[in-house]
Every structure is written in structure tokens, then in C-alpha cells.
Image (cartoon, rainbow over all chains, first blue to last red; front, side):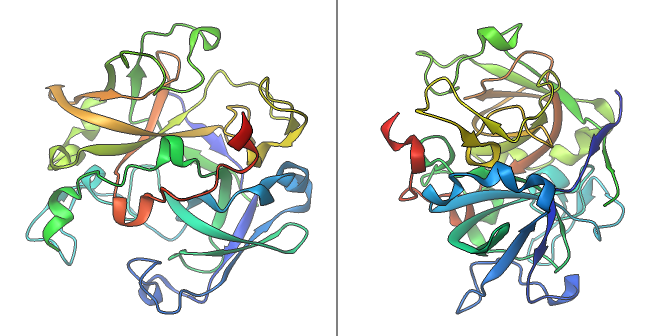
Length: 148
Length: 148
């Protein structure tokens, strides 16, 4: 299958300078820090009417994630897990997804958001409106993570 | 910013042969068709313990989506919208995301899922467990889509 190309549309600014500093879950810090998604000027026209949404999905590129084994043993797991049964950053295609609370624009092209857990400087790939009608499954199983 | 490379890990099989046939929302057909996510043999070790989850997030590449204007007027919208305020397939990085119900494996490497709305043959990029603790925001706003 052919290789596919991505171009970052901007980057993320968070309080964390290295992967070791990042929280495992961006909703756990109390208070959850305010982070910034900076959209490059040439893409800012695409943000029109984004401010009608309370939550967004950000897709970003885990540029520091390194090689991608297909099986890993997460620190908090009882044993090895297939990589697709985890949200670990080391993946064949290291695209991460975060559902963020959207606070508003600090200035044109600069989004204020909460719930991120990635390193500052992470390349941003896409912004989508979060739609509870298709994205919210509150009764979904936590799978093997239920006991962590 | 540098270009980033993706490699498909498999492909999706759906009832729809062209974009014009695809439903606008994969949850609307009644009954929702059973679709298949085919994972290439070299990635199948990454599926271990996936079957403990009821719902998954699939990321896939909208290979037929064409050029990406930054502003579009969706058929069902009252006027133009920034592309990042829509889930349209024409995006600077045409990565789609679907939250799917995971029925189980038809055979090794072949996942049975519901809720897809894409064309058959779509390249699959990633499989992640859906975690309601971080992915479910049932009270989120539908933004400008609330009145559609």
C-alpha cells in the first residue's frame, strides 16, 4: 500500500517539555491546565464558526514516539497488550486524538483548550467539532482497563 | 513544517462503492450494516486483547476526498462554514474518525463493526480502544449543527 503524506496545520502548546513530564491522562491534573492550539496563518480561514462548539477533537502527530512495537506492556497493565488495544503513543501511525474542552480564541488562530496530555511543540494535524450524536458512547466498556 | 508519512495498516469494507452512495451518518441506516475492518497480516499481532472493548475508534484515510478548500457550504447548512467546524471529508489532512460498535472478529485480522459511513476500500490507519472516561462528552454542544 502506498505511503500517504500529512502536513501539520499548526502546533500545540502545553506545560510539558518532555514526554516524561506529561500526565497519563489530560483530565487528571487539578486544575487541568489551559493549553493552546496554534493554527498556522494559511489555515485560519478554516476556523470560521468553530466557536459554536463546546468540545473539539484534535488530531496530532506524536513526533517523539519512536519505534512502534506491535505488543507492549503498559506500566499499569498486568501483562502484554496489542498496541491497538492501548492508547500508547508508539503506534504504526503515531496519530493521537484528544477530546478537548474548547474555551475560546485567545487571538485569531490561537485556541484555548483543556484536557491535552502531550508535549509542547507537538504538530497539529486536524481539528474537528465533537458531535455527541456520533462521538459519545458513555456506556462503552473500558475493556481490560476497567480494573486499573 | 516537514511532511509526515503514513502507512495504511489495512482497509475497510462497507456496502458503499462510491462516495455518492455513502450515508451522511453511519448510525442512520436501519438496520446499520455490518462492516469489516481488514488488518494486514503484518499488523495483526497488535490486535491482542482488543476484544475486551465494546467500542473502537477507527482512523482512516479519505483517499477519494480531493482538494481541500478551507471554507465549504455543506448541503444542510445555512451558509459557509470553516472546514474545521465541519466533519466534511475534504480537509487539509483527510483523516476521518469513526466511533464504531465492535461486534467481534469474523476471523483473525477481520473485525466486524457498525456505524461506518465511508466508501469500501478506504485505507485504515489506526485502531484505538474507545474509552468513555476520556472520549465521551454526552453533554457537548452540537454547535451550528444543532438546528439541522
